[in-house]
Image 1: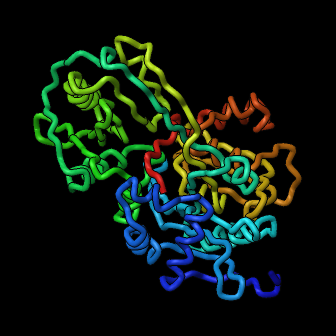
Image 2: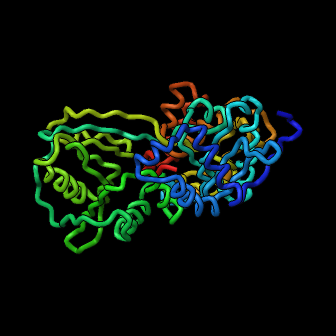
Image 3: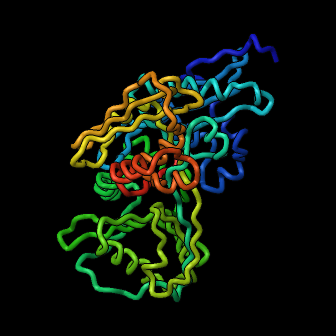
Length: 402
């Protein structure tokens, strides 16, 4: 292995087989596992292929052999009603014999530069190692709650004006329902074909879906599920209204005689137990997605702060382990309408904050008060109050997996 043979370059479709081989090696995906979900090798390559065409993929080669790689999907997300262009980081991997050479650090650095040039001022990723990505400037911004409900704990049927209809999972009705939901849901990925393709990629063949329609026949929520070994598994469930939530649980409870329990995931910050008569249900919260502001000034320029009667101002030093444009002191000004501007300043500021803390705070996953309490935000009471008032209160919803 000669270092002088290593070079970084953009990947194209001709590198597809190498790209997949590396991913499968790193994540130990075996033929057995693939056939378990009913996928053959060629299927995976075919499914990833359209994605590869749209993605920005860079890698290190040792002569002609791909040894380290990272992919960025061009995506869109909803941040408090503002649509941002987002870089979805995935396909990250290095062969073990090439690890600890700083290859991945340089790839991430290049990927972030590319995102910045493309106007992707924020990046999401699903972490295989939270500490690793934290060191690179990403931070946790969302949770996944996994729950188990015994059959006798299912809610009793309650009357609602609408009805539930089963549909094919890939039907337009499902996409339409999600589009209506993501249009007003903070943190959600606005899904195009690429995002939907990833969403379904690893699912069982027997996956099913049901939509709740209002009495005006408007799709207002859905549940995506499969039934196996007397367990009703919920992949995902969304609803725009309380009526839709009740209607979908009516549908699930109607399976009472076929199942012994319901197991599922929900991607909001709100546990279910409170909504159940028998609240002794088992729920497990685990961190889900991480995010990172790519270019702080540009991110702030689009960011919707809450309006106020006064102009607001904060001087601080921002710390970023990779992106130079985010390093140094800034003056953040927020006008009465909630428009923000971040201007670099030369003075030394006693207030310091990392890009990680800034990201999770502006994404609403952790509040300024809490971040101050745990030593992640060192500033005055007045600034904490200012930030508490300026940042919307809502945790991100992310049900995607890429």
